[in-house]
Image (cartoon, rainbow, N blue to C red):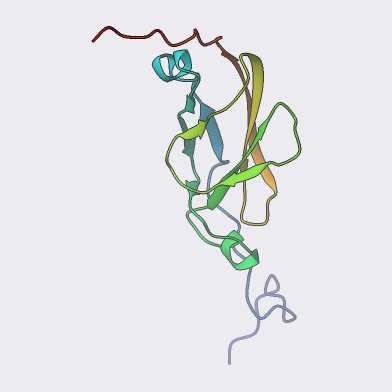
Length: 133
């Protein structure tokens, strides 16, 4: 047998690998204008170096490429929800006026990896006019 190299520790069963993945990034776009004019907030986003899927727990943290979900909070209210798909974020029923949306990229254990805050102003809706027949 060849002698053990001095750099090889005998107390390690395996050598942990360092992650080579770049840091995750969250890009949030302004609310779409046409739906917003009707009082519907539709926010498109994209992530880099992370996939948004409905997977949670410690085992999912170890998956590569990285997976996660979004936390969405409107106006700092209680009731943050998890957004787990690549679909746009859609919010309805907000009162006319200014609002903030905090959108956070979280790992499967809810640790925040990136965050963006979006200002949205919902316009006052006019009263529906009767249409002639």
